[in-house]
Amino acid sequence: MTIRARLTLWYAAILSVCLLTVAGLSYYEFHKHAEDSADSDEDTEQVLKTILWGGLPAAVLGLVGGWFLMHKTLQPVGALIKAVEGIDEDNLNSQLPRSGNGDELDRLTDVFNKMITRLEGSFHRIRDFTLDASHELKTPLTILHGQLETALSNEHYEPDQREFLSSQLDEVQRLTRIVDGLSLLTKADAGQVTLTKVPVRFDELVRETVADAAILGQSQQIHVAEIKINEVTVRGDRDRLRQLLLNLSENAVKYNRLHGTVTFSLETTKTHAELEIANTGPGIAAKNLALVFDRFFREDAAHNRNVEGCGLGLSVVQWIVRAHNGGISITSERGEFTRVKVRLPL
Image (tube, rainbow, N blue to C red; front, top):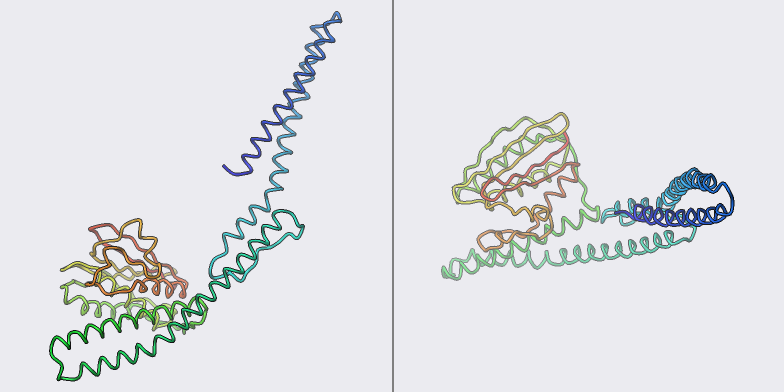
């Protein structure tokens, strides 16, 4: 129940008690006076009419007036709530409007503004740290990658040594992907990534991705199929759209079962291109569907050494879709198809 409703009920209850008290006292006084006169019945009837025709309109006017006053008083609270709901990590530099009259709500707004300023500073420090750390990590990782590749090219190493070096190289490559993903997302959060938007034949990119997915799925004998690919042209950054498709197709293949299926479908509406990629993987629990786009989130079933990944792929995909003014959603049922749907404006 809202504060306005509670205040209205309390106000109505207090007003009713006051009116009943006044009516009771008035009736008592008039009745006592009427006992000394000959027309007591007529006087009593007159008192009841006075209470009825005077008290009820007064009660109605009191309730309406009280509700109006509460509405006007609490209206700034509703405006403040709406303004606070519009604050997120993308607009922390904005300030909530103050009335300037120095009342409790004005002071509360000032407290909110100071809190938002502190949050903005914290976000900036986190972004700066992530960017600096990513930049500093790239150089040693590049050196390690080169040294391990050089060592693997040496034919004098024994098979077990080569296997160890190959494992180390895989881990270095995984770390490099994590650093690259973090760097991209942090730059995107800070507005430092510029997209080159040009007309792109999206259906051609999808067909290229289908071919790549078929190659990726050979080791697990995964069947990759086109359901329907319509000719579609969107305005966007070709490289980022290609990255989006590769991330989604790699996930569809990695999180799949042996002899599973991956399907691609691309259709159009009057205003949007609608891409659907579905796979026959283990599925995603309903409680985790809202978390799959969070950075570093991986469902428990995916946390095993046989499935590579760092939990940043879908976060990157979501950013690319939003940067193209599109939308993305995931539906999944255990033992059934998991479907990723992407909508991009034509």
